[in-house]
Image 1 (tube, rainbow, N blue to C red):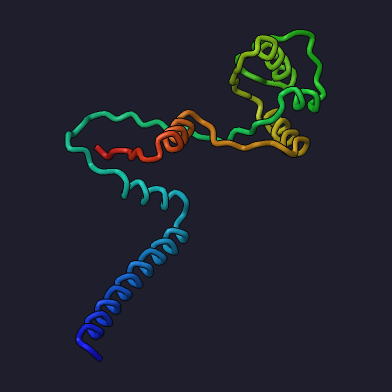
Image 2: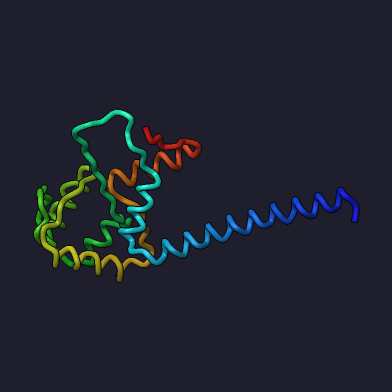
Amino acid sequence: MSLFASICKTSLSKCSSALLEMWDSYFHEQHQMKSYSVERAMSLAWDRAIAKPGIPFRRAVVGFNCNVDVIVSGTQIIENLNTTCEKGKDHENLDSLSDLHETFVHFFQRGAPAERYMSSESTFETVVRQVESAIPRAQYHIGGNAALMAERIASGFPSTEVSKE
């Protein structure tokens, strides 16, 4: 074997050994992360991503919200819920299917969007069940302002990196 072939073989061996170590490390970390609870995995991910600030501070405000929005035909849902409504009315909180119907009509007549809190858990569950069973083509999207902003930034500015300053 020539000296050149020997050097190439040694270099290739070292390179493949390094790649195997990196590969093993990656899969070990992935396996380890799967064994953690969601909360623990999230905490570890935040620990890796967040750097200690250079300037000390005394107060911090942290907010995060997200949910899953389901996109369906509002008129179809109202029809399927089998409610009646004399006229539209804006309810700050939705306590019943009638409140939902009246509020829907109020904003639908104006062509305006609205978000309202549904205070009755049983009414909320009724609406969700109706959406899931009666509307086969429902679309699900990430919701919540923080999640929507993050998604918009990520899709609109793919080369943008969030700074850890």
